[in-house]
Length: 282
Image 1: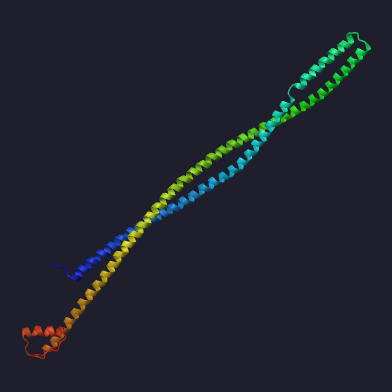
Image 2 (image 1 turned 45 degrees about the vertical axis):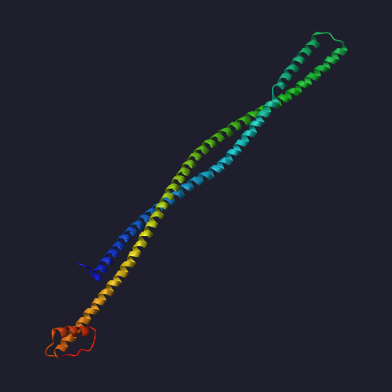
């Protein structure tokens, strides 16, 4: 059986509305998934910022520690050079010369005491002895000075060892900080990659949402147009029924005025009434 125009329009309207609702459901699902991803994105951003702050705080500390270490290393380098120069300058020359002078004095005193000399030779030997005694005294003072210097070297060496120990502890602490900084940095990289993936999925879901909404809106427009057509068809049918009802009413009233109407005449009368023409009765 051939479908009527109204039935066809109603079926199309139901189909369009059903497709619209299905697409709206898919759009809502895509939007909800997008919102869930957005919540995850917010949490990741917070965690990423915490990791960045932790990493940057360590980097700041490391910069300060690096400055301290440079100061330590410069002090150590300077002290090492100073100690090296002092030791090099002192050497064993003074002690060796002091021993030689002492030996010369002892030998000269023995010679003056045991051997006979002329007055001139004796005076010469005594002058030489005085000169040796003076040199011994000078060497003794220089050796004492050297001992003080060596004592200073020992003090500097102790300070140097202390600085080297502190520098070593600082270096170890910096290595620990480097490891922590590296750990936080690796976590930052990992979270950035994850965040990028989440944002990509969010954009994908947003595109799906827009696509489904656009299609749903298109079907909604089709459904609205079909609904208007249904209303128009029903309005036309209602108008025709009302016209037929009016014709039959008029025919009923006119029938009272005539005694007999033939079937052929009745059909003609109805036709004319529908066309709203004047009727002449037999």
